[in-house]
Length: 473
Image 1 (spheres, rainbow, N blue to C red):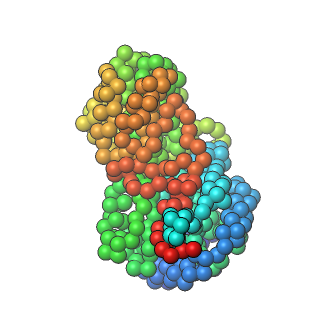
Image 2 (image 1 turned 45 degrees about the vertical axis):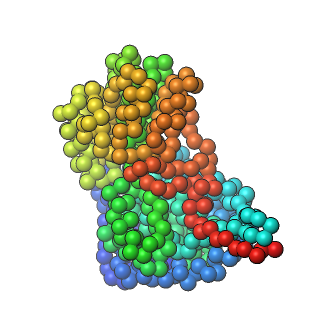
Image 3 (image 1 turned 45 degrees about the horizontal axis):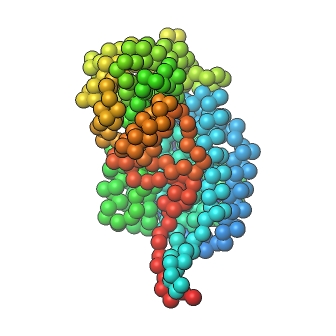
């Protein structure tokens, strides 16, 4: 078990105001792998006070100094990437090979993207000959991040907020806090001034709610479930602080007959990646009727060929889901789905040979209709629901018939169909034919998938106020 770690506040590691230990569970083994302290109101107040005190100076630190610190952070991050890979693999179950490439790589990729965007960014804009529009940091920002892509989300929030002159308090998920603790070490090693970055552990009911309601917090940036996003918004309403939300998804993947087997294989494997624990996963596969039976067979084969195993093992398998609570929720939704549709791969229980750990069978449920629970609720596990459509307009209607609107997908070589569907799909992102998004592309959704945009220039602007100044000459 790892040595117990505390909080990083005002440039120092500090002990909590009161003892409140919490065991971190390794999902591959169901054994405790670390103990952390959960904060209380006094710890939250101390972190907010440190950020508030640091803001007036940090807001006006020259851009060149901030750029130097960001570049130094990237150096530290890259030098210590193996530590980070091991931490994320142990805390949330990403297989170590994936953790090194994808989980760690997401953080460095976004950090590089922010450095490029920040370098080009201007904080003063001419409006008329005698008027300026100024972009200024919003102030003290609470950053509440999830467990499924830890470094992806921490970097997407902490780096742009700090770059533009905000000061921050990070609360990583208590389920997977080890990467957040390491990131605090990286910030300290990079040399950011005291109070600019603070970190404390806690749960949503405790520190999360305290930060959301705190009168000295100017903005909350949250990534997590839509349910939690609503609670944060309500908690923040009394102080009218800005709330930026990146929430859940129920992505539709429109697979036309001319996409062939490749489109189905990509969609199924993309659904199962990270054990299905991605808000932008294509969990609803909509298949053109003439290709439907073949597509079901292909997706089922992909599920059966997807290996599942411990996070500590090298390879291209998927690991466990993050916790017993998630495992139980997924099992319950699989059972409901089996009663609603037709199970063609996977199902209940752990995969053969795995008797301990939160492992879920990659599962395919066919003959789904959009009124079924399995089509409407975010499972957040390796579970694919397949349904059919006859026309492109029917596919678009099915895809849009959801409370969510994060990422939709299109598989067809026909440019006219792709452009027609992409325009009409109600989501913040539309990925076509497996083409990933560019560095700095805005990440965010419509409807109950949230209201924020992260990454690149859009992510930097998320933490800025707009000020009009007349008589400037």
